[in-house]
Amino acid sequence: MPSMRDIKEKIASTKQMRKITKAMQMVAAAKLNRAQATAQDYSAYADKLREVVASIASTASKGSNSKHPMLATRPVKKTAYLVITENRGLAGAYDSTVLKYTQNLIREKHQSQDEYLIIVTGKVGLNYFEKRGYPVAFSKTDISDDFSFDDVLAFAKQTITLFDTKQIDELHLIYNHFVNAISQTLVDKQLLPLKDLESKPTEKVNYAYEPDEDEVLESLLPLYAEGQIYGALLDAKAAEQAARMTAMRSASDNASDIIDHLSLSYNRARQAAITQEITEIVGGAAALE
Image (cartoon, rainbow, N blue to C red):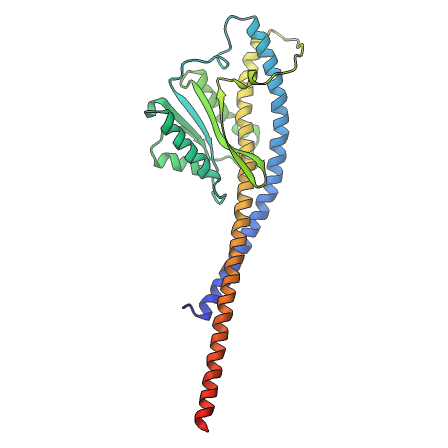
């Protein structure tokens, strides 16, 4: 049985750890508010951009015999998965949900590594795939909590280039979607070839194009695809902060439970020591009579 001194030291160390987890919870909550606001603001912009691009794409396709390469479906010989994870951990099951899903998906759909490649953000995902021998084409592990579009533009362009140069025939985004502060859902979204431009009806608007629809579309479609990657990163960052806040709250609650249990053990040990001392005093007095 641990001594009273050992129990007291354990209580002190657990209280110190609880201070740390509570501080991390508060930091994550503050970052969540900023990340959520940024993701929501960009989502509104992305929706409007999708409407514009969809309208132009539908007009251009009527006057052309072939679709833009980013809209055209071709035989799938190789698939790329852009997997979004974090750098630090301490966010509960945030990363494991995405990584296990990706691993199972690859096992079900592919027979060899020649049929797919992986693009990953975050050190957690990069270490996971490299240790298991998965073909990682490239990665990005320096995305800060307050990143901008310019910070990830080169990474997004590099990803889109794989499809433009026909190194891949499909591109999927796999990440955690932010629902609310206590809930995230896994998303597996096909980004390329672009299909969401035709999935929802858009309001028909008469646009004036200069020089023409095809050239405007040539510039807008890569921008739209890059923006989709940026939006997914923003969404995943909000989900990450929410998961971390929840994990730190659970850690603080568990620390409180441990402190209560240790305090009870300490009080019992202290009461037993007092009782023992009283018994010895009474026994000594009786022996002197």
